[in-house]
Amino acid sequence: MTSNKSTLTNSFSLLFRCQWLLIGSLCCTLLPEISKASTWKAAEKDHLKLDLGIISPAFLFDLRRTLGSEQSKIQYKPNSQTKTYLGFAYRNVSLGYGFTNKSNADDLKNLGETKSNDIQLRFIGTNSFEFSYQEYAGYYIENSEELDATYAGVPVKIQRSDIRTRNYSFMYLRNFDPEDFSFVAALTQSDRHTASGWGRFLFAGWNESFIQGDSPFVPAANAATFGDLSGLQKLSQKTLLGGLGLGGIASSGKWYVTGIMGLGMAAKSANSEFAGAGGKNLLGSGAAATVRFGMGYNGEWNVFGLQAIVDNTEISIVGATVSTQINEIKLFYSHRLDGISLPPLDYISSFLD
Image (cartoon, rainbow, N blue to C red; front, side, top):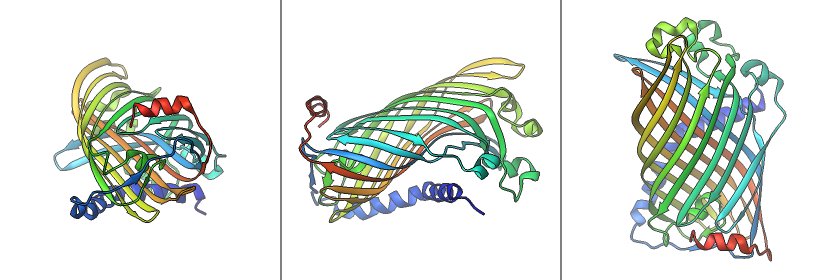
């Protein structure tokens, strides 16, 4: 029997694969209305929005090597259980934390156990600042059947309980069209759009990530396929990234669909360690992308919907590519409380509007 967790994970994976189509469709819907000014209603100063939901965050990494027309890859994922999410949003400030739900016995057997911490803090406005911290211990190889035929047709994956990751990140976003498009409405639903709109934005960020295992990330049986990359067992990266993007929201009454997509470049400083071969330091560059997608109902007092976030960077190392990705998807319900004034957060919000 397929577990609820597996069904939920497959649904999330389908959403991520379709994200470019969804956001592209949204942009096509909005572009014909460029000349039409949109309106949005700012969050009240005495409204506190309480959030409750289910969140599924993950820090993923892939190893890829291309020879001619053939590409070999290893996709590492944590068995990050869905979490019960509690949070709040007050004007331009939001904070949330996820409490890990009880693990499913079949998932633990097939994918192994992952221990994780994930914290997000966002200050959203014309100038937006996002801070996040992720820590995971325990991974499995999603495409195990491509590396070892004995895993074909079975739910069990190659498990690596020794692999640990840690990531700190900061993202700044500057909205060039704040009159037509509200990041607060799109990302935290504290503001409410009353008509469709779109806006251009700039993003810049920094992150530091660590990936480490007690043995190489590439299974010994696949060492020849991945060449020099086969000995890699530790990688630490510092990344500076930036780019431009487009965000939009399609609003019909109190219902909305929103998408934000930014593309740019990343400069990286990396330190790698190889089994029996010491370490290597390198400077490199690569692509960077940030994606936000959401849909739901944003009423005067009640809000519910779905939200997805994807941040991706990659770096070339010893003739191959290592990419890291932060995923987060959330199903939520929120309720606004009236008559609650938080002067310190009003003060912070005044700098973000």
